[in-house]
Image 1 (cartoon, rainbow, N blue to C red):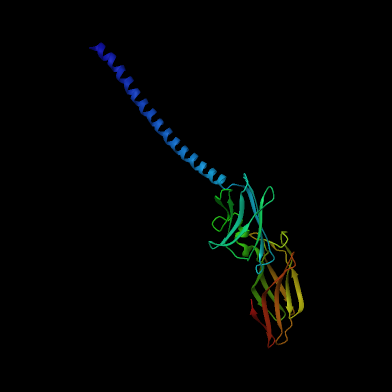
Image 2 (tube, helix red, strand yellow):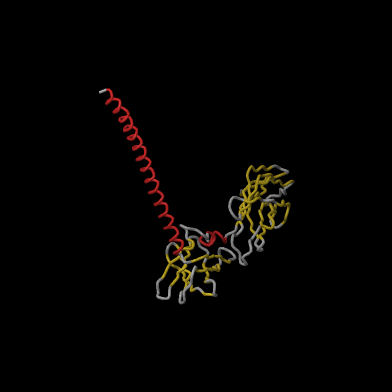
Amino acid sequence: MKRLLAFLLPLCLLLAGCSGDSKSLQSEVDRLKRENTALQETIAQLQEQLSALQSTALERWSLDARGTDEESPAQILFSASPLARQGGQTAQLLVTLDGAEIAREDCRWDGENYTAELSLLPEDGYGYYCLLTGETGETEQVLLSTPDSPAAPKLTYLAGSLSAYANALAENVTVQEDAIGADVTVAVQTPLLSADGNPVVLVLAKLRWQREDQLLSEQILNLREGETEGSLTGQFPVRLENPPMEDGAAIDLVLTAELSDGRILTCVAGSWTAQDGRLDSSVG
């Protein structure tokens, strides 16, 4: 009996150890299965993305515009190179606004690229698509840029890209018998598109004290770049000594901003009128 017990005890311990190893191995197998499932899902997603990219059938494309201001039509310039072009394939540039088609232009083939031009009124919210039609009539619509997917935001938001303005606000104004003082916050926005494709930049900005058409004093401003493309800002203390005090005399503090395309933007930051020997603020 003692010999039997001596034999069974190590056997039981061995079986117990095997049971523990088996559970550990099974747990490892389950973990690997889960990881493999997740990996397969990732591979499937990447394959879908690759297929979507390949289905565009365009190796590269570009959208550009030429325009003078937000009141005049802008010229849209489109170019695209297909991944592979079979004989008989044609292309069109399709433009939508608020989801409705507003323009469609046939593209020319120059041996390497499809190109097209069309005119659009400056609006915000344009969508651009390239329509590729095969020899047998099958058509593929390639999304280029839309408000939901603004790959070319300057053209999707065309009106904003062509706009330019100057703003100025006089604060902390002090009016005394011998001087007017203020802190002026200035903001200038240059257009993001131009008539010749060259960037429009700020050439010169001034704050001018004026009495009607008479220049009393001026200060040249050094503006810094703002948070968005084409924006410039700054804050400046200004002071006009010994302002004219005749009744009815009006003094204006005017911001002028000269752009490289020849435009001069203006904004009145503040205005004061003399009455009974005193200057009263009327604007700003």
